[in-house]
Image (cartoon, rainbow, N blue to C red; front, side, top):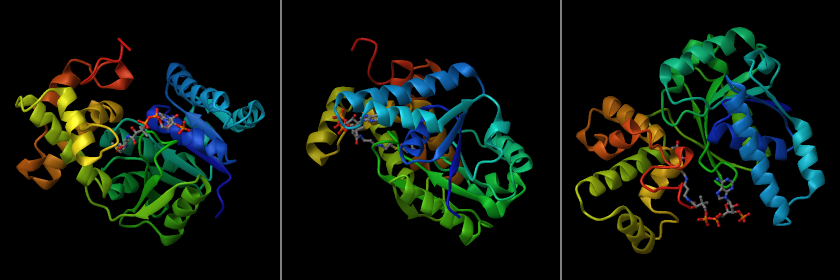
Length: 285
Ligand code: CAA
């Protein structure tokens, strides 16, 4: 099935990025969030990216007008009901995701494929909640979505090959490389990346080195494009902590124990770039 209309639920960092590349790829996009202020914030991120691309001469004002013509926003989930594919990118909380998938399953056309951008929760558990588990698949994007080339595609226990094919084909259309992963906590990338980021937070907490030196060490000593603590700030420390806690609970292995430094940042509301403070202070720049 060729996707023409893409629904994106959640206008945060990931949802906005997915909506942006969908519109750029020629799809009709409906971007929905629960409050207008969240929709407006997501739209602002998208239009800022387009303005920068125009300033760099990468796209024209006419391109932006075309993209905007294809991008609709809403605060009503019902506006998603005739989409061919809906990608959920809401808060990383399994109970809230299940509630949302139940609603989508009841409301959408039977042909609609429902995808979750979960960073690592069970697709099967989310799929069962929808009442149409054969039509649910994981599509895991990476931050910043417009830049990162990968999407992990994860079938749940009852996902059909037809549904997987829709996800794979959509990735091709929006210019991403899809890799199929089995359902396991964190899939591929986060299974490897989250323990690394969590270890960097442990190292900082133990006083091994300063934030800046830990980051510099991994950039210069391991050729990482960005240091691990700066990456925590980019991903969102709240997201990272939720994933780390989920791993700790699912694997039962002490190596996944979330660092206190992550918990303290979250308790302080210092979630990274999105709140202006994390391991670094972005309000001073
Ligand atoms: N949105 C859109 N475009 C962005 C962007 C953003 N937030 N940040 C950077 N870019 C674009 C820039 O506009 C620039 O584009 P052009 O080449 O067209 O000019 C390009 O990316 C490079 O940007 P910069 O020169 O400003 O900076 P950089 O070279 O340091 O690259 C980066 C920035 C791509 C983010 C790089 O630091 C990087 O690769 N970081 C690692 C990112 C990563 O590991 N992401 C995965 C996180 S894990 C995850 O997301 C999954 C999960 O479930 C937790």
